[in-house]
Image (cartoon, rainbow, N blue to C red; front, side, top):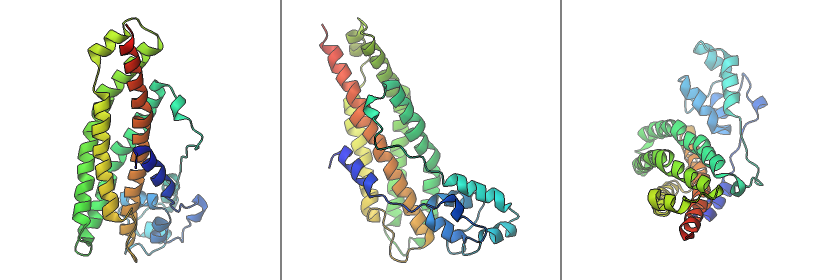
Length: 266
């Protein structure tokens, strides 16, 4: 299955139940809130509120016990529920190189940098409490950490070297600069090799995560922490597949085509 087909398959198969803001009431149980929408777990973890086995208490009661303002917590929970959707009709292929690069950095790179610590922390807590019951969990955590350690330097390389280079050749190509071919020969970076190697390397880790979790399907009667951990992994997978699709199938393909055309100019 190609990266593009894999992206389409996994995006289409992720049907997550989300809360409506009005559903969060003062008498809503913490556990129920998190089960209905895993994104709320970030708020509860921020305030040290147990949302797993000890989370079977009404929201208002928990807030009063901890001296928290229920209205403030509800607002943060509602903020966590916001879903930004991109229409299926969005034509990424017609975006300018500059805009596409900036989108990838500010959406997908930012997602990884901002959320990896939280995702790993959530999984570490789950693994520590349940590794005796589910023996594959240490390997799952190790695979996630290896994915992070492989990804973050890759993001930095793209932002500091690959993306600026792509923008430069795009500008030279669009302006029909007479020095364009010489520019590519002088500054050319291994885009094609990097695309094939790095993205296949990332895909290997994603396939391992899917295999270990049965495509992020919690075990029967799984606890809340189990479900939340898998939801975060599924979210990560979903984001990475779109990230890889935009880079491999659109951005890098355009850059390689421009390189080849400019190098053909005598």
